Amino acid sequence: MRGLTFSFLLFLSAFSAVFAQKYSNEFLAIGVGADAYGMGNAVVASADGVSAAYWNPAGLVGVKSWLEVSAMHSEFFAGIAKYDYVGLAHAVNDRSAVGLSFIRFGVDDIPNTTQLIDNNGVINYDNITTFTAGDYAFLGTYSSKLKVEGMSIGGTVKVVYRKVGDFAKAWGFGLDAGWKYQVNKTWRFGVVARDMTSTFNAWVFNLDPEMQQVFLATKNEIPSNGLELTLPRIIMASACQFDLGKKGLNLAAEIDLDLTTDGKRNTLISGAPFSIDPHMGIQFGFRDIVKLRGGISSIQSFSRMDNSTYWGVQPNIGLGISIKGFHLDYAFTRLGDADANFYTHIFSIKFKLAKPKNAMK
Image (cartoon, rainbow, N blue to C red; front, top):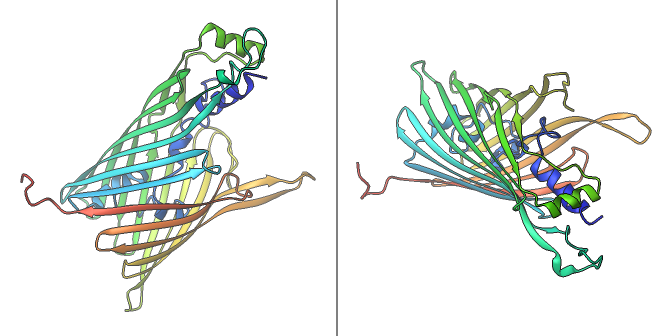
């Protein structure tokens, strides 16, 4: 049993090429920004700030400030896993913008119990060490307006680094592309091709002979170097916004359709090789100062003990407050299975900076 804990965590964190083609780089599908979570992550057509670098690179041209900064921290599974995001965006001119984003999903201080029992068969707790399993992504984004009024395109280059202690690491590379069209003040449409050329992770394992013996003794397969692919995902989105009278009230709504290409998934429309996962959100606002959000996502089928099935959804609610270029967003959402009680609070901030007076022109 001494290698079981380690092997299981290595399986969850490293996702060797043999086992995890479908869910490769799933940490990049979690999302960024509490404002998006409150909308059920249905923001591909409406994203127009720094977080658009993640959601739809074509929307980054909505950044009008010299510098726009966003940050988010959240924790999963009672704080065991930590998820962090930082984004920067800069308006190059009135027609283009650039952005840099960083995402980390990691589990720290994981016990390595492979040497718990020494060569003499004696349990020695001093032999327990710890390691970190972390996934890192660096995103560079460029967006530009087209000649057609209200239309823009954008692209994101992704560099992925994944590391499991000193035992395994991987480097990956991928591309996202986005298109956005704001028809008028009411309607917006967006399309994003994530991992459009397939994103790869090249895994390299570094297990010494003693560690390999632990794997064999516990009947675990020794992982080998390999290539892991993340197949393309297409997201199509439609959004609308209306003014409610003359008192500064407004209403916005969006629906997104995620089309995956990696085989049958547990989604509302499930098939092979394509599955479609719809999610939607609605937002009430008052003069862009206060925003109340709600959304649903992860519409899935579940089985009971008697083999009957039922449909479950993930509910999301959120609140946003904006004061002179500073935005504070909050979301209350449920993580994990749509019928599980893993609720969490998520906060994110965003602020806009003007060009320093002493900056070079």
